[in-house]
Image 1 (tube, rainbow, N blue to C red):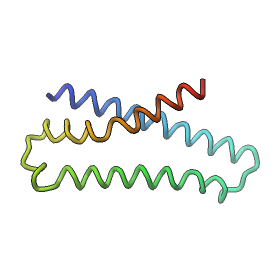
Image 2 (cartoon, rainbow, N blue to C red; image 1 turned 90 degrees about the vertical axis):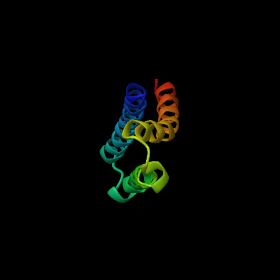
Image 3 (cartoon, helix red, strand yellow; image 1 turned 135 degrees about the vertical axis):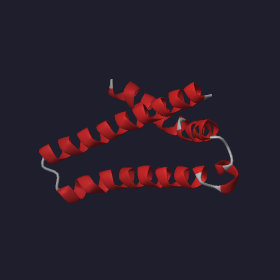
Length: 99
């Protein structure tokens, strides 16, 4: 169970890392192309707030009374299974579309 939880979290964090890199590069290219910081932050701020909101929701779930009674590997597996699909699908979609 621990290895499966580690694999899920590895996939989740790798996907989130790719998406963060992609958003950062798009912001950097926008700034280099002459966009103002306000225009770039309009694209970066929603991404950052979404990541922080998801992290807060998963943290709240992990410390909910019913979930807190689970063993730590089971808790990591549950939160990893909930966190994994969206970033992995978005990373795969952006990977295919960016070439």
